[in-house]
Length: 516
Image (tube, rainbow, N blue to C red):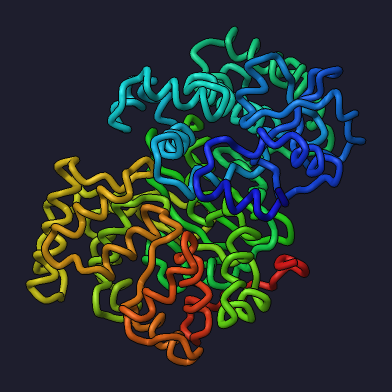
């Protein structure tokens, strides 16, 4: 099976995993194929080290290779992380953001810190399964249970804090989620074959200390990546006080489990530059996970573009700007509120409405490096808002009230671990939620890669200009061939227009080669 075909098969939910095709994995390792970083991990039997497929060292002998579906699975049987390729920092597997089954939902929730906060019973409760069922299915597909997967994430968080901050090791341990200093020390030694102090000493020489309360990171992605519509969309729709485009970076506030956070994200040639300001370091892993989700950084652009390029109408669009991502969100409930505020009005008017709610009901934040002032208000805070504050028709006020009621009661789940189809059905049952609003939320908030907006004016105008069927029903029939990537096809269609969402703000100079 070829790599591209293997990738497309995996995105359709093949639970066997790439790691089970030994010959394909060997070819990927021998060619140092970065496309498969995060898809599987190579463990070397002689050195007891595990690597990403693109590790720059000389590939081991074939007879000494074995493959695992997750870093946690390799760690669990005694392999240590390679110090050269840092496999724990590779892009995440595309599978967890492309699928809606229980395993994918569990992986999204683990990345968001649910196991550390609520334990395995809390994870199981969020998924609607027993803890035993969750354990069994994760073991079958990932080779590791939820505790081992959460432990691997804690180890990565610990390494980041050790190497990029001057926090005392005791603070690092608890910020990374470890219950004791001893467990922290033992885990770091087991995973990285170095004590925490030795790990810090390897990178400390010549590195300036990070400003208090902030951390600078590189967020990896799979090439290619075209950033114009991704950052253009976020900048053009930015809510005053919550988001801004400043000095070549998209900045926003985030409400995290232990406090507020601020992030600045900047497109670079081979990574996304990320600086985080956090009130509590325990939120680091969750903040990184939400930033990756926001920018769709774990996508598999080669698989997406390969399928969309089979359509002769889309093929030139893909060839011109390959690797378009779907701009997503850091908070599903926030986006649902914004989607209602933006129904049938301009982008500027929607920003004005949202900004008024933020100023009135959002918690204030102190931004040390820009002009951000508030967190977006929670659904609980908005439940007490005065409808008269919003210059909207009564029907839309009723729609907003119905949404807030569903969110406040806890019955409507739009978080990372939500059941996509159940959420769609619940949204569709609310007054004022037509197909456009439901699918917009499915695309941006739920993260469904196959969400589609055939009634959207921008999509219809693009279809008309390109010679595609222009009516929603006919376009939907034609778009069946784009499944399961219709959300990405929508990005390519939108990008044919001249709306500001398609343009990287002019104060940013695009790094040479970012789309290569």
